[in-house]
Length: 404
Image (tube, rainbow, N blue to C red; front, side, top):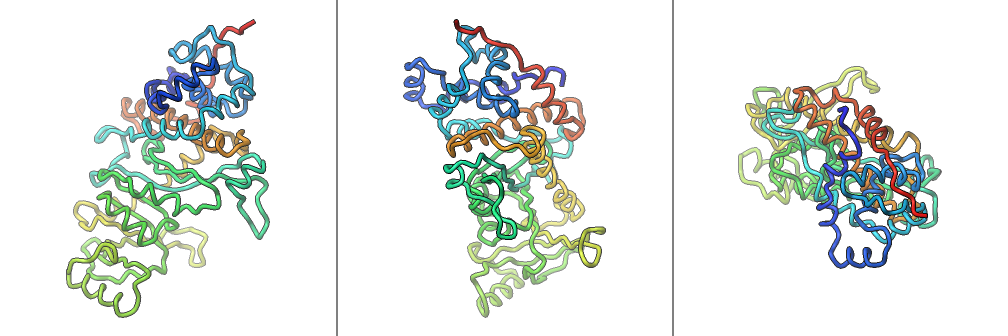
């Protein structure tokens, strides 16, 4: 990890992918007006996520020497002012870094090499959401809205992020960003339609609905989702490992139609996947939780029906791995951004841009950590994200020449 530097951004987010995210017409227009080139703006925006506590001009002063060494910055340029960087970010817009993230973000764990990355022959993934405070400006308030507790609004508007993370590496590989007033399930819907067949996606109970589960299952991916204890899961067949086969049914189907589907599932008949899907149910207690009985019931459903290829103990372990995404959120919100800090962008378009920059920087650092851990045959969890960030900040220095 001693070789960590700002170069990790250029390695994980290479220049050609940044240019790929910009159409040729826009590149020509921005370069011809003598202002900050768009690819430089993209990297400076990412650098501002790496140095969240510094003003924009100070960030530029810190990193232009390193960017020059990696062929991203021309040392003959003067360091832009904070207002110049803001204007350049406005010209860049919110979509370029979103597209860069789409081009770059992919799982980095290697099967049979990265520890804890695979189970049941599938890559263990997780979906979850978090929120970040943004400056309390009229535009941000109108776009993102506030959270409320006891009827009282939060001090700052909040932007909501829902992402899919590779559990072993903590890398976000897909994400949606939207107003806090948009629910997690709504933001998650497009992500669930883009799952890979080689994934085992874990999800907490807040994400379950029959349409969401059905759409995710349609991709062919393995699913392991927690559901609420009051979800009706009629036992159709008990399996040798104590799990049982059941059926989940669209909640809009009730009464006699619902009972007919349960009988058809019990008889082994083919089901209309738009109405119902067979699942395997795994239940276990977790002691010492803040519940009246002193334990908490965990109820999981999966589309992996064969207990031989997906043992109950392995699935319980995989669901526990879902908490690695909570670690990823903490890395981004606390270790990278800074605990309690508000994002710097005062305009909604720049908020979206800034969040994509955070996701890219977080991805770049964790991708490096995972590759280093894989090469050393250790679990990526043993490599400190905090130390990696500190090294990146410490070595991402150097200044460009100032123009007279």
